[in-house]
Length: 359
Image (cartoon, rainbow, N blue to C red):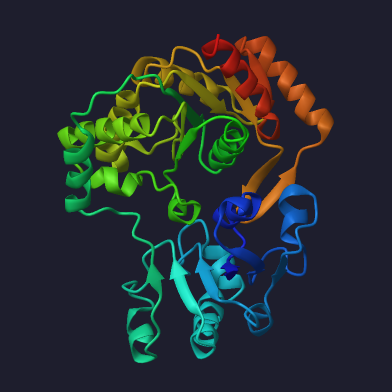
């Protein structure tokens, strides 16, 4: 099935990086603001992928079977400037209308049909956008609990947690890179908390879901999920946290923060990997304290660095090899970590984990 993605943001980046894990062939990306006319693979991975980023909706949808929306076309605080500057709302609506007229299936990883800015317009034009249900019903959750809560397992699965000192730093990229490395010769389950998890056929648990659950329900559900992955004889379990482990806005997010910490501690990770950046050592120090005191990870097995940094919504700066190596040297000297590498070199972390647990 040929798929066109919209827009060219971090969720789309992940789908392109790991497109071999999808059931779709990505033919192009529609965007109205960034990297128009460029090859998506060249922008993300510095090598051609044959996937054009274009603002020409008609051309992009010529041979498409499905249009996948990785953002809902709504104006948020961090997107407001771009949204207004490029008249995104009008162009977004026009894109949906063209896809509808071409009889192309539309799916969104975020709820869109009930958004106030689009609800009436979608109904008037009889346009339907299918929504991935990454929020499970109470009945679905209870079914998993009933099926797996009390089964006996050997508890041999090694659980690896990937955390970031802040959001949008490469946690999911690291997770899927490590998953790809492990799946070459071992059975591994990637527990994905991002909204695009269904596209990778490995739905995990959205933190939007966690916020709606009681603590005892989280306890039973996580235990049941881990039992099910053990029963499938997975040797490894890899989870990437959402947001920054030390940058939560506590006042507004306290209920979710408590449940998130409870969930992460419940998993009982064997190893942690921390994604860091090029300047904020204070956040690294705070993250290490939180991992140690609240999650039970005494010391991360590795620090990983992104090779490019988001400076504002949709805009990135690539780090030079000299900058990367200088930062690696600084981190090794200050924090005494076994491995400090770029996310792209995560295979070195796999080697260390195998050496430690497969004696």
